Length: 114
Image (cartoon, rainbow, N blue to C red):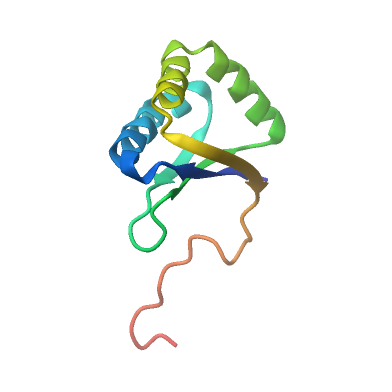
C-alpha cells in the first residue's frame, strides 16, 4: 500500500515566488532522499495563501527513513533554513492518506463512451 504525505501550507501570499523556488528545490531533494514527489501546488484562483505538497512512500517506515536522510542532506537543511529566515511559510500541516482504488488517476471517458 502506498501512503501519501499531504502537506498543507499557509504561505505569505506576497512571497508566492519565494515559495515556488522553495518547492522547486524539493524537486531535486525529495527523490534523492527516498520520497516519490507527486507534486507541489500553488494557489491559482480563489484563496491566495494556501499551497500543497504531496509526497508518496511505500510505508510509514519508508517515510521515517526518508526523514533521517532529509535531516542529513545539506541542500534540504539550507532550503528549510531559507524558508524560516524569509518567513515564507506561516503554518504547515501534515496528513497521511492512501488513494482509493478505482477513484484515483482515472482519465476522462472518450466522447460517446458512456
